[in-house]
Image (cartoon, rainbow, N blue to C red; front, side):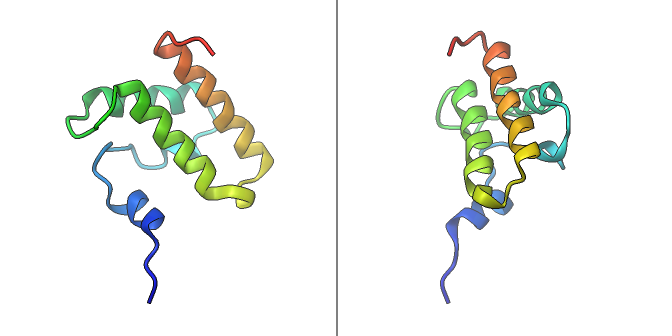
Length: 91
């Protein structure tokens, strides 16, 4: 039986303690603020808070792949921009 590491990351990872349903929110600002809050308070992350938050968001988008509806992808992509703004990062 092959076990998928990506499923384990989303269910068992303790790098960030995410709020329930954070990625299902329709407001990009709320998603970004939630990720920032989780990342800033985490003591188990390996990178900077910005890296951890952006990595978790990218992981979610990439793992969904083609199964992610275009409308959700737009919201999550806008959340990436909001996250950059919250951390004062230029893109």
